[in-house]
Image (cartoon, rainbow, N blue to C red; front, side, top):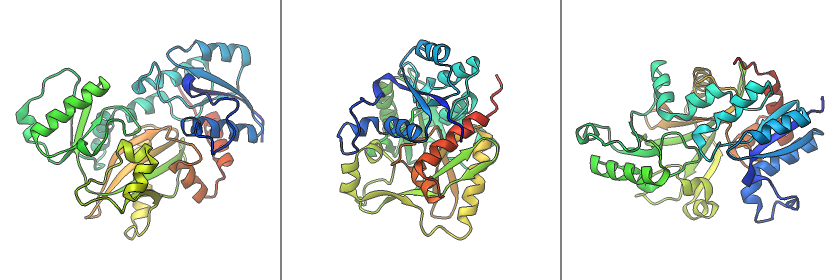
Length: 341
């Protein structure tokens, strides 16, 4: 295996401290992804340069000019503190002619916009929840709201990580919808989307590849202990609060007892979605399987979380990859990707 000069790009606030070495260190929770990737790359024998980025590409330009990396490992989830602008980083790398890991700018733009991605998938006759977009600062038509298929769930239009999703995100009429939309808009300062709530099993499907794709074993979030009055949704607390999950008996695990032929159906669907949205590198697709056996695509997440404790890494391990092998595979896909300007 060729040893590479790997420029690791991460948010300047997420550079792991030099003295952070133990998993039990309470600081690890904040820096886990960056720590795991950095450690894996060094264990693989690659030369690593960590570069922090916030709202200026100047640090990237200096690192490229002075260090001349073979590839950039992109861990940026936002640019200028805006998740919708994360594609700026890889666009700049394309301009500079530097290979990079993960998704290309076009795939990022298509997938990050939940409304745009749903329109594209609907065109290809792939089931997605019905939805309505609420532009920031614009008034809503109450007659249009009343005609929506309730219950609805209110989300940010382009942010990841279940930001602003809570039990109160589920609404049952136009007035509740309008109130929740306004709350979220005030919270994030961006456009909001409300989509039809699909009751059913929530499945996570990780995909590796550029043109030839590998769909990894399917994961599922299981809500065994929640109260009857609670909704089975991946809220911000569910995603980021371990104690909350333990309190309500919520767990991430490999999908069990799927209907006959469903795994093959999901695999085919995941590949179609990945190609339609022009994704590359790696991604995670979020699906809902309704009680009547119908699959709905909720969203696609390019450059999904890749800490050693995240779903993608667990699925890769199930498929026979060690964590270091997964990171090397992501590097190799970055080197092989063709990215026309």
